[in-house]
Image (tube, rainbow, N blue to C red):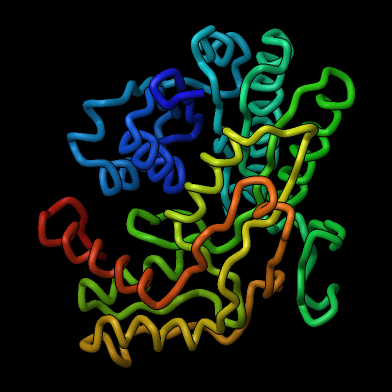
Length: 323
């Protein structure tokens, strides 16, 4: 299918990853309808400039409402990327709402695909939090053979999304791809516990001290790579309901701070972190994803430098402030 004939609906578009997905699609010349309720607007206003915004349609819509989702996904829509959901700690503070948005909203999308004879390309956001702590896996290594064992509402709800997608394929032949990112960083990230590395880079750009609320070894992924994974997954020719980890760089947070300091020397000694880790897998691998959508660039020191440069420009232009 040519890009000129594509129409993507991005649900949860005003968040961090959603804003980047919209940006990349718009820069490809793809028709985009973005929708969300009314979350923190800083991500979209940081990632998308007026030129981007003028080339997309933005609608306020509640993914929990089946009629609203059905109306949103018109007959000309070819792909849906579902990102709506509560991040931690919000998911733990309000597990009922978290389940309604994550699981209920995805069901509404899958129901539309059933009525469309499974012809929608669907990608949705799961999470590496579907796995248990790193201590549950040999050497903390997670791969395509590792079994999920979520420990909190966030992970449980996302794992339930995956099982729901499997059921829709088994019962109705609806194909989909659920992606499992972990600590996604880049310009425009403000919310959620895993936003700490991005906020550290923002603080370095602003010349402000910052203390990250976790440490240890984590898998970090640049948002451009993650957004590209969602777009490619929605376009992939799938033969079932698939789930896959998004590979990333495994790095100690103290080493990440050193990378930040190299890109922003004036921030040396100003960025610190807790010694405790998130109790999550410290390494992710999944050959299935590359087989389905092709290779993704690995996060590098250059991506950290790019993020800090992006934040400096946003600060200089007055589009954001910190703290």
